[in-house]
Image (cartoon, rainbow, N blue to C red; front, side, top):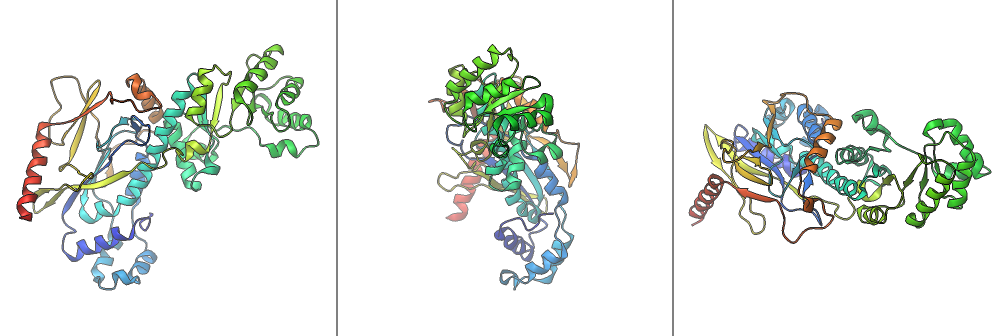
Length: 446
């Protein structure tokens, strides 16, 4: 499954490992984010089930292997390598931080321990699926925070960077706190609640706006939400009111949303439609929404599309996947990168969470006893087998909601504070290991 959905150098390195006899070595890689994106104070993990599904189904089909063999980059590779690829299945161990967990820079959110070629080949896909969904879940959490008591629906598939991105963005946004999505496949595949109204084309396809509303009401009944700004917003509201019940809501998609929502609310209330909700769309993001929230605009639901599905203000996460251990013939070697601004720390790790800080330690260190702490990285796969079913999107959303509630208020701000209120520390044993590895590398290079 998707074995070729990777970068070429993953496959050329795999061939090189095989030719060098290194394919029996066991490697440990960690996936983490180096730094927080623009104006972010934490990021919210998402995408683990898709990563695990990929690992469980990883394989090369005969036609894929035939195509690879014909590439000039593989002209000097032995036939045995392609036989190896034909039999390849992921046989390693995976540890992951549960979806919906707030995490911070340089904390591993996924650890892969597997034969070197297996662990190497999966880098591109894991970074793509976990990095993207984590990015969108984090963006959704910001927008939901900005909306206060109002709800947020994800509307971004049509502006996402491809249909599959739109589908996964819908799932991630739900985990981040949205109440649902317009993406129907996300409803079918992941159980995400689906929402929708109608388009301006619906209104314009009828000879009159009132006639379009009447037919929509006959179709949707109690679920009817009218799009009332095709021609004149307040007149559209009056026409919707004139049809009486059933009606669930009205949607505003243009103009001054604050003033129009107040005026429409007054019309609805005067007609006794106090329970009819106002939905607002129109190129919304967390900054516009927080202004409307602060002004007490009577908007109950925000539909957010482009800005959410693309994380428009910070459209990349910068996740990385780095080798931290290599074991051969029962001898373990710890690895790290020491280039400027891209320093990594060696050895498999664990993240222990206290009430207001995290401790990144060596994986073999015991749970600290100086204060209550929780180990965040948990076993997910062993020898290529899933240990137990992963939480679904609903459970991940609930996890996210409870975790976000526990965060200090400053971390929920739309802006980065001058001093970050959550400390990420490193254990003495990890720092000592880092120093030893660095010293050994200096000795080797002299």
